[in-house]
Image 1 (cartoon, rainbow, N blue to C red):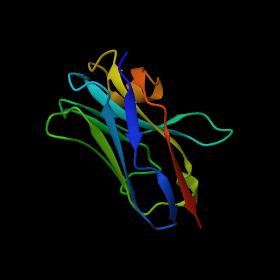
Image 2: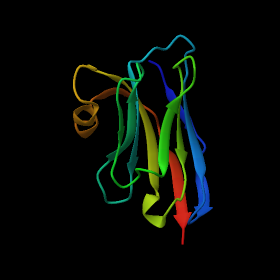
Image 3: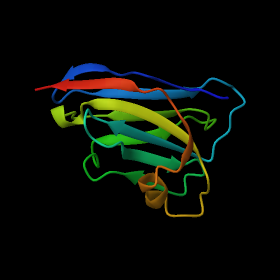
Length: 129
C-alpha cells in the first residue's frame, strides 16, 4: 500500500507563509488527482485545494482563495501547497490525498465528497496571532 508523506508543516505568526509537500512512498506511484484537506480540533475535515493531474480543473475553498496555491511537480508525482498570508483560523492538521475514483466529475464535487482513495498521515500547521 502506497503511503503519502507530507512535510513542511510548522508554527508561524499571522501573515507568514509555509509550503507543504506531499511525496508518495513509491516512485512509480501514479494518480489522477491531488488534494489538500485540513482538520481543526472539533471540526470536520474540509477540502482546501485540489487539482486533476491533467491540469483540467483546480479547486480552492473560498477561505483560501488568493492566499493558497496548489501545484504539482513536472512529473506529477508530488504535490505542493504554498500558503501565504496565514491566519490563526488556518491552524489545523493538513492532509494530502490522491487517487480520485473519477475525474469526469466537477472537481468541487469530488472534494466535497472527499472521494480520494489514498490519504497521508497529516502535518500540523499552527498560526499564532
